[in-house]
Image: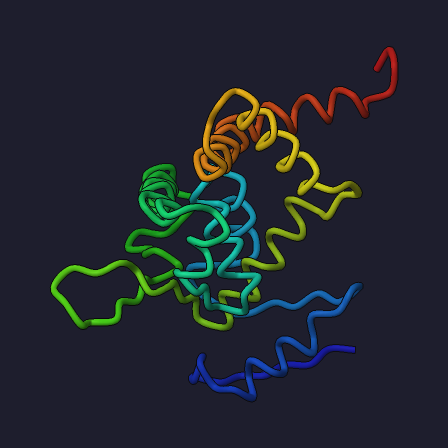
Length: 198
């Protein structure tokens, strides 16, 4: 069965509710976006580096909204310093390599409280249809695996603490380590799961 919904209002609550309802296991949802097709979103998710990928995923999984303060509490005070540069570089690379169209812009935007000329980012927004596109892209590119990543994080934090680092620093070092070596760890896991002699 195929359903088609055409609208020009991306931020309509009904559209968002329909998209959410349609995103069930075994269903394919295609959202028409001239720039961010499912194929381009998949490629973007593969190409964007560590902290940028983590930020984009968090915003997509948050339904198009990420609260900056909560994100900092979870990942450290400096967690939102720099991840958008990785996203910007990936957009630029995509345009240069022609897998993104000329004029493509960042899929997400930052928000500020506006109370001063300089302030921390309040959070990040993705239009609801892009939240669906990127959430689906992450599910395709990085399918959920069994295991408990929190156990690994806890273990690494404990090791850094044993070396004399504060809990806060230990968490930041752990996050940096995992971001820096994510691709290496994924390759190692793939090698471990490969059949012997293959």
